[in-house]
Amino acid sequence: MTSQQDLLDTLALVGKALGNGHRLALLERLAQSEAAVEILADTSGLTVANTSQHLQHLRRAGLVTATRSGKQMIYRLTDARTLTLIELMRQIAYTNLAEMERLVGQLFADDNADEALDPVSRDMLLQGLKTGSLALLDVRPADEFQAGHLPDAINIPIGQLEQMFNLLPKDKEIVAYCRGPYCALSHEAVKRLREKGFRVRRFAEGYPEWKAAGLPVM
Image (cartoon, rainbow, N blue to C red):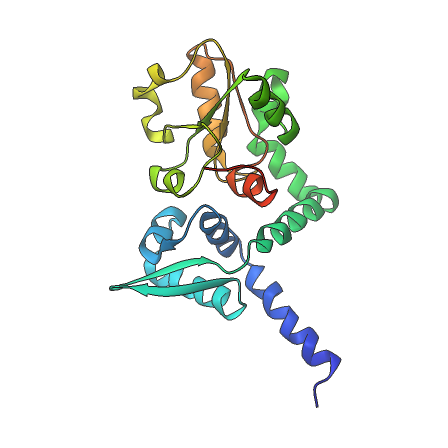
């Protein structure tokens, strides 16, 4: 006979699957678009074998699904609500773990050194897009951008930024965004563009959070 403990043990499978930083990174990448194991391995800096092992943990917990395309296994998020779960984890950790607050402060230390680098909130971004006072810069790789992006965003992957400054407007403030709240790509873009004289800040969230909020994407 099924007991309450059986149910809680099954629920714990999700918690165990999320209890690894590499798996959270894989979920963040899959929140951008579906991807083959090889692409996920390249993004995460893991071997294909190690990536596959982590994906199997996520698959057993029902967090990702996979289909075969030729010789490749293509993975995707099973449920967009996984992003909500990860966001709650992030908020709880930031509120209750001093180490989390310290690490975030180190990651975005430049934000605290200059108020002009304070991140743009979702509401601020919506207002700026409505009035036409902001321009959006997506610094994710091209395949992630093609799978979905914020409206009217310009895609310049961070590795190509130095060669494509001419595509960016000088008469508007630029808001750079990438994969999520802790993605350093947009932060790096802000620093480089400010050195070139652009008015630029980063979006406090990322494409997955924007999409999960039901806001328009392309």
